[in-house]
Amino acid sequence: MSETTSAVSSEQAGDLAAEDVHEQKAVRLAKRERLLAERADAAGGAYPVAVPVTDTIAELRTRYAELEPGAETGVTASVAGRVVFSRNTGKLCFASLQAGDGNRIQAMVSLAEVGEESLQAWKDLVDLGDHVSVTGQVISSRRGELSIMVTDWAIASKALLPLPNLYTELSEESRVRSRFLDLIARDQARDTVIARAKVNASLRQTFAAHGFLEVETPMLQVQHGGAAARPFVTHSNAFDADLYLRIAPELFLKRAVVGGIDRVFEINRNFRNEGADSTHSPEFAMLEAYQAYSDYNGIADLTQELIQQAAVAVAGSTTVTWADGAEFDLGGEWDRISMYDSLSAASGRTITPETSIDELRALAAEVGVEVPEKVATHGKYVEELWEHFVKDGLERPTFVMDFPVDTSPLVREHRSIPGVVEKWDLYVRGFELATGYSELVDPVIQRERFVEQAKLAARGDDEAMRVDEEFLRALEHGMPPTGGMGMGIDRLLMAITGLGIRETILFPLVK
Image (cartoon, rainbow, N blue to C red; front, side, top):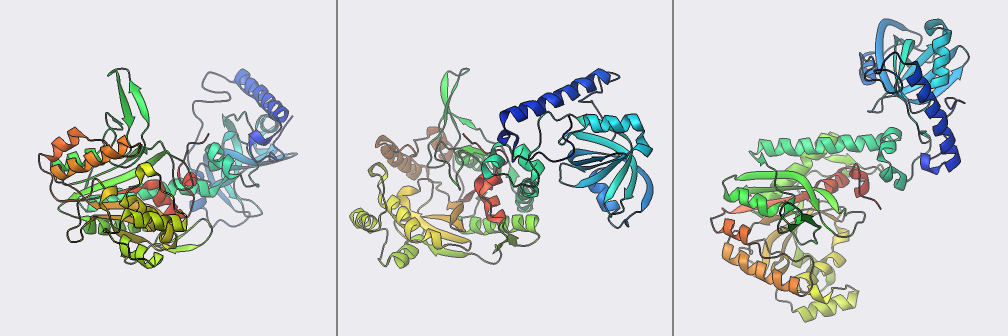
């Protein structure tokens, strides 16, 4: 039995009937046994330790891009790739070999070049999905297809399960559950991985240009902090203590600033034991950066530069093209608006830091905004009402400035507006992309803020921060005026590519 004459007609192996999968796997296992039985030594067979490769498929496509139909180069090359198309017709077999980057080349296996025994072995042993190595002259077929006229070939890795149908789009669920198949089948999946790598490289390059140092801080912490979020809890047998997967690197990075690392950043993983949706993932990549002798205005300027340079790295300009084909402009200077002023304008009510919680509660009830009593503060009502009235209308990148003091325990008070702090959130396409502070560096006020957070925790707020004595001790040794920012890498990819968060993460967590 051979499957090389046509692609498997399923979206994914799991979509085939169980008996069909079982049958195909059994056939392929038999081929594996034959390859093992016929190998000369332990280095060969169905999974050889090495195969000849002199060039990548991409290199050959670049080098011979102008080769005319029917032309011969006289050059012999060895390439390897996955078989994604196969057609066996008598004395001549055709196969498309695909490299990991998506580039393809045609392999032509003819009786005249390889002999009857080798040709028959190709027909008998090679299936869709197999990795093969081919050696032969680089030519252009009569139809103008860059090809290898094969003189020698070898199995590089035997696939025991069939590929999905490469001519039918995988469902989103299939893409995220079997990303390895998604990467084989879909250019955009590979492009997204490449885009993410370019984004991270660009961020590091921009930071380096500004004299920042990259550091690593603990992911296992004795006390969670640095954000309002519910943590994951684990247990250390060595210390016989409960530990927390970090929700943010903030408190450790600030320790570094206290220690004299005036410009510091980290790109690493955070974990928040919360809901998952189109913009949230329990595990996500986070960038945080702190710059001594700056403030939330300076760090906003840096954040804009970081994002715009990342867009250029991926798209070649600050105008990016999303997955749906729409263009989105990340260039120019971004608007900076006041949270209170924009909420007042959108709601038709004057709302200030002095507005009573009763007035806010009444407005929330009027428009159907619910705030649980255990977290109901002036600031929480303001933020929830702002999201209701304003957030969805922010399409262009916009810094939303000056937040309520009681929802921002790590931010210094505003230099001129009582009741607010020097904090911004950056919104793009209606979702929050980044946040930035003029950092609170007064250890006495920081302790007072922690105590207020502890009271919220006692009321049942799972996201409230606890008093962190070690962090306070560091602050008591003196932290300079500092601007800080945090940004989700996954969300940055969303802004540049237009994809949902599960598409920007290579292997997202799924049930």
